[in-house]
Image (cartoon, rainbow, N blue to C red):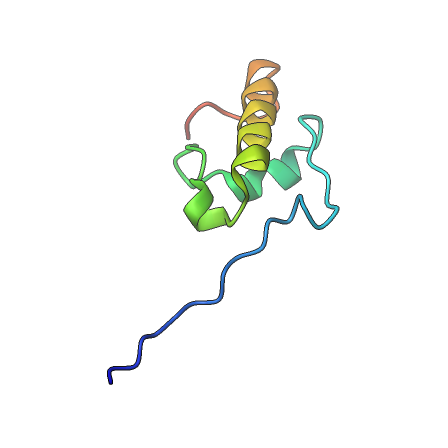
Length: 71
């Protein structure tokens, strides 16, 4: 039988009790790539509920100029 290289499933950091807010751009920068795009949940390991929450917080931070729209 062929052995499969299974990766460890990423755990949602928000479900473990960490908070993310639009007023904290340093934390939000972890969820944005170098071009300013929002990183997908398959990369970050967030659950669907918290990925939508993080994207909303990023968009709010962009609207009040705490984060750039692009770089």
